[in-house]
Length: 208
Length: 208
DNA sequence: TTACAATTCAAACGTTCGTATGAGGGGAGA
DNA sequence: TCTCCCCTCATACGAACGTTTGAATTGTAA
Image (tube, rainbow over all chains, first blue to last red; front, side, top):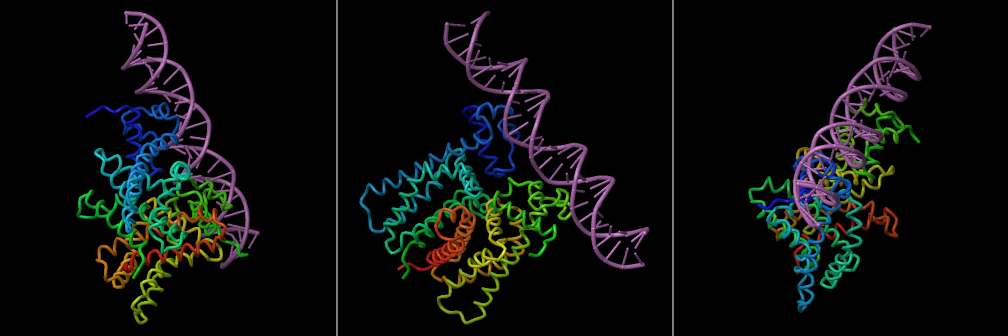
C-alpha cells in the first residue's frame, strides 16, 4: 500500500465524508481528524474550505467527461447505424458506472458527491458545467437529436434533461437503496444502470 | 390583506428562505428578521429549528398527497379505459403544478423546498414517505403496473422511481431555468409539466 | 553538517450559530 | 382595576465553525 501525501489524504477524506454526510454537516476539523493531519493543513494546502471542495470536484469531473466524450467519439467516427441511440445514451450513462467501480472506491463516492452538488445547486459546479463541459453536453444532445427525428428539438432537449435528472437522482439514492437490496453493491449498480439506459431509450423511442 | 400570526409568518418565511438558499445557509436569525419577529419566537412556537422545518414540510405534504390520491380515486372508480396510463401519470405529476399555482406562491416555493429535502435525504422526509405516504405511492406503482403489462414488475418499479427522480430534478431546477426562458413563470411550468408527463408516458409505452 | 525551504503542529481569534432566560407588553375575564 | 396568561422582546451563554499565526519539525540541497 502506497503512502499518500497529506494533500491526497485530505481530498480523499473530504470526498468520503461529503458522500456520507453531505456538504453541510462536515467541518474542516472532522476532515483533518479523519485524514490524520492537523486542522491548519487544510488551509495550508488549499487556501480555504471552498477551494478544497472545488478541487475535490474538479479532480474527477474531467475524468467523467473524458470517458463520456471518448465513447461518443468512437460512436461518431464509426458508421452511424440506424439504431445507435442506445449506444449514445450508454456513452453518457455508463461512465458513471465505470467510475463507480474503480479499485479504491473513490469514484463511487464521487458520484454520490456529484449528485449532492447537483441537488444543492453548487454555483461552482454550475459554472463548470456551463463552461468547461457545455460543448460535450451539447454534442450528446445533438447526437440524440439526430437519432430521434420523430421528436421536436425542444422535446428532445427536455427529455435529455429529464434523463439527467433521473441519473442524478439514482446516483444520490444509490447509497441508501442498495443497502435494502439482497444484491451485492456492484450487481445492484449494474442492474440500476441497465434499467436506466433502457428507460432512457424507451422515453426517446416512438411508440407503436 | 389579512394579518398573519407570528407562527404563520415564521412558517412562510422559512419556506421562502429555504426555497431560495437551501436548508444550510439559513439561520434562525435571518428567519426571524425576515418574519419581522424576534429570534426567541421561533423556539417559543416550535421548540427548536428541526421541528420548525418539519412542521413547514408536513404542512403541505398532506395537501400534495391528498391531491394525488383524489385524482387516482377518480380514475379507479370510473371505468378503466384501456389507455389511461397517461391519466395515472398525470395524477401523480400534475398536483405539483396545481400546488405551484396557488394564489400566495407558497406552494411553488414548497415544491422547491421539497426537491431540496429529497436531495439532502432528510431523514424526516424519508420517514414520512416510507410511513404516511407509502400506501399512496404503492397504489400508483400498482396502477402503472396494470397499465404496462408488457413490462416486468421490477422494471416498472425502476421506471417509476426514475420518473420521480426526473420530477424532483425539474422541480429543483425550475427556479433557475425559468429565469433564462422568455416564457412567463407559469407558462414555463405548464410546458415543463406537459413535457414531463409525455416523457413519463413514452418511457412506459411499448415501442414499435 | 549547515542552511534554507516546505510542511506540520498547537493554540488562539473573531464570528455565527442554536438555545435558554427573565423581564416586559397587552388583551380577556373577574 | 386587578390578575392571569399568552406572547414578544433584548440579552446572554456555550459550542462549533473557518481562519490565522508563529513556533516546531521535517526534508533537501550544498
